[in-house]
Image: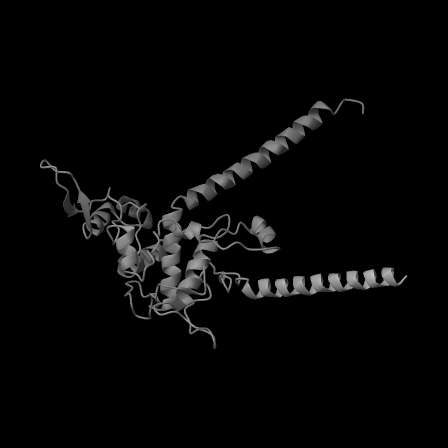
Length: 286
């Protein structure tokens, strides 16, 4: 009896020890667990291109192009966008030709086998600000700025339950512009007790961490608008986000029109099938 009791006590002590070790490991794991980024979800904005019937605001796209050219293009490339596509923003061919001529591109080789530099023409693409990624990283605190051609489609933050179910019905596809807008307007001082490495900047909307190498790029009055729109950080961020959405999906309007026509066709086709079925089986006994 004593032997059985002692064994039981030893077993209980062993199990208690295992429980204590497991609890300690769980606490250590929890303490070392990384926070979920972004710390704050992007703020949902109203966009003219939202919804199944949304369209681009060409005036906003033109302002966004100006913000990109005067601010963003110093660090970020737009490699997949050709100058000729700017006619979709409402510019004439002559205006696009004059705009492209403001840039220089590398071409060649010439008859002597050498590369040379010339003024850009409408068929050229936006030239990158740096010759390679290494040069871009060296000029930006070791982090090469990403190309902006597809940024508005690549930076959408996943929305959890139940929002993703609602998105199916509302056709929410503006996660990228919402993220870019929130990031550009989300720079702030770090909370008390949070240490920021040298050369880093606190932004709770950044997708990969709480800090990023890019300093706050926009400030009030930085870009002059010709149409009288507010020259504020909020307006700049909204306009350049819309422009980057167009850059990533220039055929959005055409896609939505096609989708609507397909849905109308399917509705009519389904109605005709139902009426045909009723006509065929109307005289049949069931």
